[in-house]
Picture 1 (cartoon, rainbow, N blue to C red):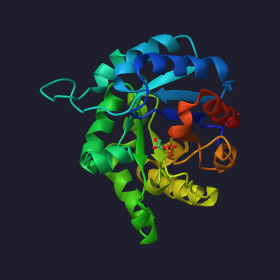
Picture 2: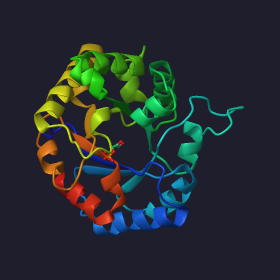
Picture 3: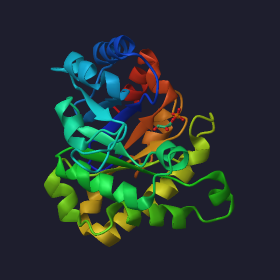
Picture 4: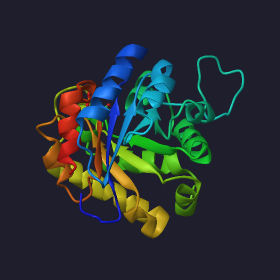
Length: 258
Ligand code: 13P
């Protein structure tokens, strides 16, 4: 985390955990307990049913709210889906897009990730676009190929200007699938190599905007490994799953960002 042009971003993805009351309690504990640096953004992504209540509880604090996913249309006959507009209405400023669990468990394709990214940007929310290779892909030596395909699939014909014009920018999250929920964090040097590769691709497609796009690392981030990951020059923040469900631990991760 070096560049003066990028604020740190620590995001907690609560996945399918917590009731409304439990989410509000966790959100309050994080907002009350964490010492949030002046150059750090903190975001939590509760379940959809808790979004509005959490956003209300966090009003006036430094913690913001993200949706975990959305549909690309504003409204329509899409049973079970939520639009970016509805997320904004519930108080969200951010939305995860293309999380590996969406890609692998719910068959989200690169083309869908692109449509969602555009929809989120158009609504004025910040997309946190997730990319990452499986273990087989890493062992097969195709990690960078996968990252390149997922990055290009997500942006499609978007330009760097588009990404910055619509909202507070675009955020990428590198989440190696084999590190998610496994307790097996990527080595800091491997994370850095993937992030540097992604920043190169962003520069290739977006030019100097690459210096402003934040790239988060996600996958078994814990209070004990956060600082080492954040010390890498191209790691601009963290996307935290399991450890974000514990207010004290998540607060320590936030503190590691400064
Ligand atoms: P864990 O931190 O539980 O490995 O989850 C990472 C993740 O998927 C965040 O989006």
